[in-house]
Image (tube, helix red, strand yellow):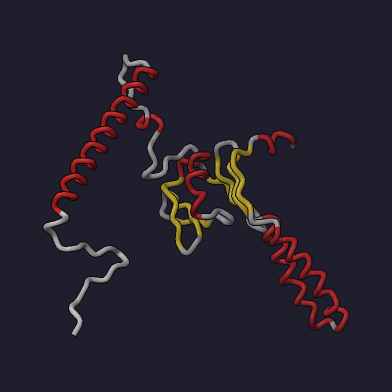
Length: 191
């Protein structure tokens, strides 16, 4: 059993306030059962929320996605996942057979973290090999120095271009009509 807890790479759960609030609601509904047995079904609602908040979630264990529901769980291999969809604040994993499996407790903002834990690549995110644009024989330090020199040179060129534009703009401001800013109103002749 000790091995199971150590191989969890990522864990997504609902906020702990959910099962705590459900427990408080469960305690609050107990007097209804004392009032009469017909009200006993009311206990099922906070109990179901308590179990849902305690158990539901997603784990990445041993490189596999484990989706946990209040009753049961499902293990999905990363090779079976074709992508993720986010609809109405719900994240689903799209499988190879075009079925979607809802991932409880995974917010849309955490999909890149989930994909990285599974070893998948999110569209639009640079891969590690693409982010490293070094030549085959070029050392990393030399590449970093070259990149820093290029950035500094382009910043200096931009600064000199801006100075030239502002100098030209100052000379031509006398000839042009006054500009209207975001909060300024164009002047109109009074009647």
